[in-house]
Amino acid sequence: MEKKLSLDAKIIDNARMYASEIAGDVQAFVDLHSTVAVERAVCRLLGIDGEDEEGTPLVNILVDRFKEMNLLQHGAARLIGNACVGHGLSPQGLAARILSDGAGVSGILADAVRPGEQLSDGAGVSGMFADGAGPPGIFNGRPDPDGKHQDKADAAERLIIAEASKTVSQIRGNRLKREGFIESFGYGREPLLYAIVATGNIYEDITQAKAAARQGADVIAVIRTTAQSLLDYVPFGATLEGFGGTYATRENFRLMREALDEVSNEVGRYIRLCNYCSGLCMPEIAALGAFERLDVMLNDALYGILFRDINMKRTLIDQHFSRVINGFAGIIINTGEDNYLTTSDAVEEARTVLASQFINEQLALRAGVPNGQMGLGHAFEIDPDIENSFLLELAQAQAAREIFPEAKLKYMPPTKYMTGNIFKGQVQNTLFNMVSALTGQNIHLLGMMTEALHTPFMSDRALAIENADYVFRAVRDLGAEILFKPGGVISARAAEVLAGAEKLLGEIRDMGLFTAIGNGLLAGVKRRKDGGRGLDGVFEKGEGYFNPFVELMRVEL
Image (cartoon, rainbow, N blue to C red; front, side, top):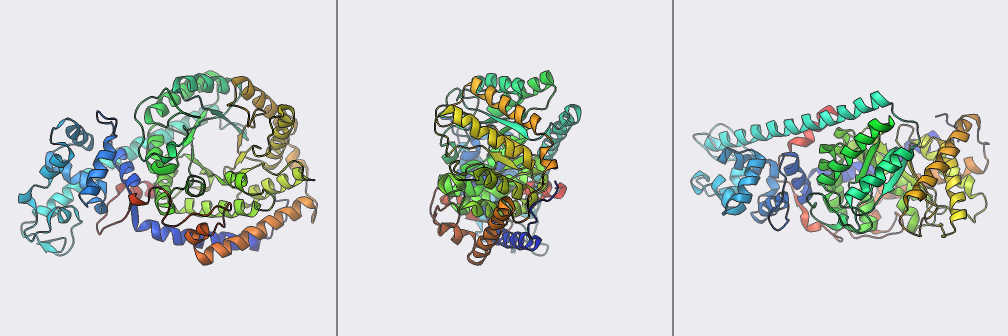
């Protein structure tokens, strides 16, 4: 897109440099730690699935037991590999054995590390799972004269790498299948229209999703049931009940993907599927989305910290691995900066949105997510009673477009100042559609005139699509025809927001992101570094920690 705002390139470069330093500081912490959710995701990527009679996922059973045995610091992959070698089983075979064997997890793992195989100096189970180190005849710094323990460790690692390679190949195949659909149907004309379904019943969601696609929607987002982000497990199977949304499960993903592929062939457009990869199970849901070929995932740790009170250490670690998976799977990540303006004034605090976009960009790059898969978020949320509110909105959207030219920007509709007056609401959404068209947004969440009244009916969604289609068609090339007056309202506003973001990023860089969040620098919400949900699931990696997927996926990225 042509640059029209004459933004100061040095300020942009400085802001990006500050954000890179902030992200680097976070990454240094992330690299030394893992979480129970990361290890459960590793188990899922190794093919372990299912639940016990009480509905507890097998991955939770395994990881919780590893934690109780004080072994998790070595990584679930190494522990599973050792147990599989000891029993001659695949990871899923091991899980099935655990489910059917009366001895349960403890018995299976005890068999895998029989006392007779422990190290002679009493290093015990922990030593068995640690990486080999030292000269021949030494394992983990201890005597191993016949090489038995080292051989077992090597065999376990080979087995896990082989299993992980199969999964990586499967996910690569899903990425290629998506690319084949897009090659066949075309990418689609942007902005892509993003519509929400949220009945609680996956089968009713499918009916509504197909209707929306036939009406013109390009992206179907299945809203997750209220508070699922706070569950420290992923439910199993298809679900028929939810609260304000539908549970995110692998089977629900599969059913909706199958339905959207069917309607894609019917309408001759590739219909993308979006769900929520956030909360306490962020990396697990990323893994399930990669298995079932989701196309877009809401994936933002800052959102979870600020608006769900999830511990910042936990969710930033989880976010990194989830983004590695999403990046490799070709999934567009959507970030949640639009939510900042629900708690802060959109005029006074616009700089926080831009600053967060810079930070999210740098965190995503460190996970291997390419710019073209970054759906950086922002929103049309300025009070409509403010004079020149449309110009101010236009300035911020244009600035985001120029500062992040390769990103798949996700633009959110007005919500905060929707009053229930559906006629005024339709006008507000029309102006929102105008800004999106003029500034080249990529993913356009449809504004509903019944926002703040009730969950949209299919007829509400149809009217929203009709409105957006009309505006986009009527002003398709207007953005390329107009320039902004140097020093005018639009240019001055964009420069003001950029300068504010640069200053804020400098402050965050100086104190660190954890402290900055604690001081309420983003969205005016304060969170404690050691507060919030999920901190007990964070642990420091031990020597020899092993997660094959990070390297296997990052190599290609």
